[in-house]
Length: 600
Image (cartoon, rainbow, N blue to C red; front, side):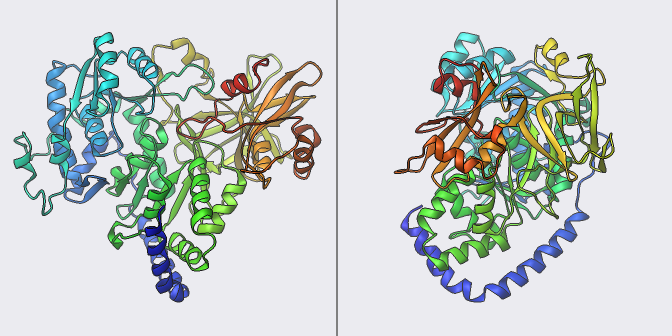
């Protein structure tokens, strides 16, 4: 962020901080009233699945979306999507449930393509603009996509791949985007600058009954523990996921959310894009995450009040980078610090962290800066969101709360016969039951059931069967703990649970402790094979510039919070820990790179 933003904040802080107490009181009263009103606006699941574009009709000329090019209304997004849906249907000779892959920037065109595919009855396969060509080719080939859609800036990478796979390539111009834009002084007559003669009716080719049991989307797993698999989600799955979050987090038409996440994962697609558009709220889309742009939006620098965001969702890496920017630019000026705290604590109603474990030092520092105790939640590609800390209530760092509406969870452990599971805890949004009395802390394998759980892995019947129990519970592959009526995630059972000397160690818990060291800014903990202990606890760390740390120093620090058997016995300092777009570390790849003679 440049000096212009610092100056803007300084002058604004001078004027606002003086009246901070009265401002806080007024805004908190307003937020309380809004929260009470939003209870009556909560959407309940209808008998039929109602696709997201159908809801858009009732919101008419209300602004749905804002990107760098301008504003877009619900009605115009609907009409633009329907126009493209007709073209897709003609291209596919009326066929339905074909896979349509797309590589789109984070702007209104993404929504138009997504809705158009669904209006014509197709299955969307969103891809990441940051993926290399071999990964894109894998997704197109594996999904058997008939059509791939992109824009001019991404067409060079797709043209040879589409030709090789004999996949029809569509490169969009700006016509559909302009058609969807909100009329203003510059584009008062949008129709005249497009090639389309638009039908203003609300009809779409398919009735709602079609969506009750049809597939909607393939989202590929992150590949952190194996080859990416196409997760097949139905429209019913997506509606269940949205309804759970709309109910739990009290989404309403007045909300404005900032979107900076990749649009090829559930976090960015459902939580931050589809939820607001399903209830008539507004989504502010940035083309990518940049610390300066996000701080400008959080603090509403040079923005009118009606464009001020009140919700923000991100991954831990994003919060870490925002904290670093804050420390560099704002931390030495008391008035700006007070201004940042005042604006964030009074104008923004909810901040969420997910997709990767949130280290407690980040949780604590963000609360110190903004007044927000980040809401941590848990979900995965196959299930959508499953567990969440409360919107109203205590949020405990390192925990993921309780089951969301519609989700059932249980913690199990294998029976001695190796074929059946013993149920230790089972819960829903109505509460959890411990099967054996007197147990205060229970850990084991986390399993999930509910309408949000995916249909299958594409073309992998054996893999699908393997991941479900005989009574149809999905095995998440995560180890969870239930303690004091809340759940926490100890990590991926295959890579984050380290078995050393007869003990089970959560790599995530060790990482959180290590990140509390003042000279360490990032770390990952892995298990190294060891003939004596089974596995050794090894830490891969990034230190602050100009700092050095020895293993003996790290062990002394770790023993203040960890049992001896969980304290790392190996330390490797690196310049950077590779992570994917959601801040996740591929630990098998990290182990191979840092400890090439060992396997996890």
